[in-house]
Length: 272
Image (cartoon, rainbow, N blue to C red; front, side, top):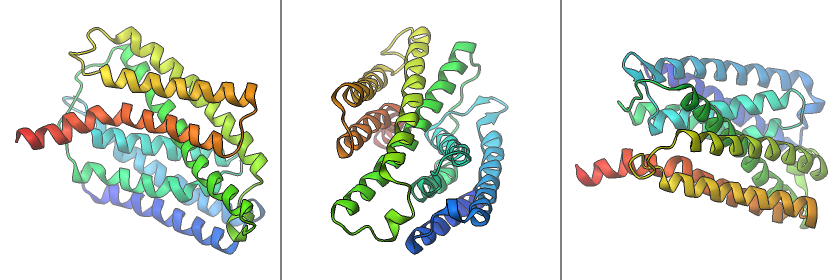
């Protein structure tokens, strides 16, 4: 594929992030500037649609489906961006794009710098369902991790009595926390279904290089489960919640990308 088809959405993602950062710097709440909000929405939608077309051409190959590290990273970045865009229609989450879109810009370029021939010839129905649930759960929990980072910054500034333009550009912490848990709940349910579907298609853990993936995915699931218990029963709030979210996301990150990084990047280097 011509690199231009991946560079263009990357530039659009960066442009949206830069414009959002500019509005935050000015202390402008986009929910009070609907014309600007919809312009940024249109630019984000263009980037996501173009990115989707590039992904389709890269992943769907004549010899099979490419699920290499670069392609999966780009696909997950696309899902996260799409989920954020949909969330923005009903919730004041636009400024999460400050973190999400630069990462999406980087991930969308990865197939250019890390071309791969890794393919899967055929996918069973259970395998297709498992992959879809895995990508959706990771994408949703990635969105919550970005939200946790921003709420951590927002809460820290409020405690220091230096709210500045950043906190004025975001909704109140109570609103952010409510949205955060609605996203975590959906991500946790999707992760649970992903683990269950994974058990149905696992035959030989060692031969399929799945031992570390199962371990860290389960660990992430336990972390998010404890987080729910702590919030509902013990009344956990604020920074403690954010720390547990980031810990769970870290384990999920290792689970999804650890084996691919070793098998596709590090192992060829050391055996080359």
